[in-house]
Image 1 (tube, helix red, strand yellow):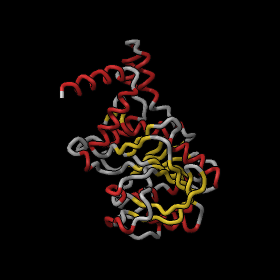
Image 2 (cartoon, helix red, strand yellow):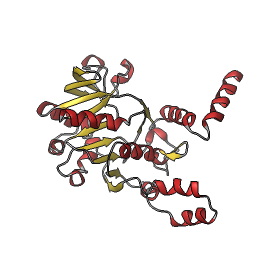
Image 3 (cartoon, rainbow, N blue to C red):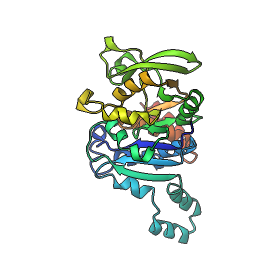
Image 4 (cartoon, one colour):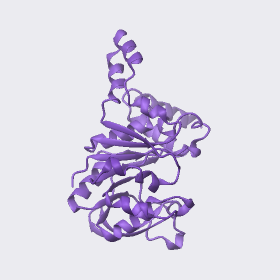
Length: 289
């Protein structure tokens, strides 16, 4: 079970980040020195992914431009002998084989993943949500791929969340296997608190088998009137093996302002150029409050 392909759903309108996302795709908002989408693509590549399909929508052309060559800028940087900056600009164009496909209709995450059937073919594939940025020593997608390949199963990423948050996510029914690996036997999307299976939701990362496409095709609209990926996975985990990986790392939901600011601060503190300055600046500001 070799995972070579990844799908990144990035077709949302970014309503939680308006008005910043009125004309700029939320995935292109700058997170320190790179747009959000580049962190997600880099995680996929660092996990061994070779081919990436990004599901987009109208008004998202900036993402395609970002992963393309830009001869005008590159020529100017080369003429000015700014070779380090030139390399950083070119690097996004050489990360992987990156393809784009429009969802056309905003009908939910399940529908978006269903659009990837031709790209995926009969191979297992990773899914990385376009809002979720991870900070970890071992890429979170790699952690899932390792578990999926070891057990010959689909895999989902998870960490425990609060009672307040679980009703906004999915809830997994799980049985312990080893260390941070669990067998998934059922799940529910956005449950009432009393109907939850656990406080473990799916958080932004998946490794799925191509069997999921036939299930998506027959999945009716669920929560919010959309085709929910969780509803399809609920059936998938009943007919084939699925594991949940309580991954090592920190997840940032950059699709909302608080999560975006948390990610900005934490990634900036890790930045070689700005980290030291920012640390001192935060200390100074904290003393003045």
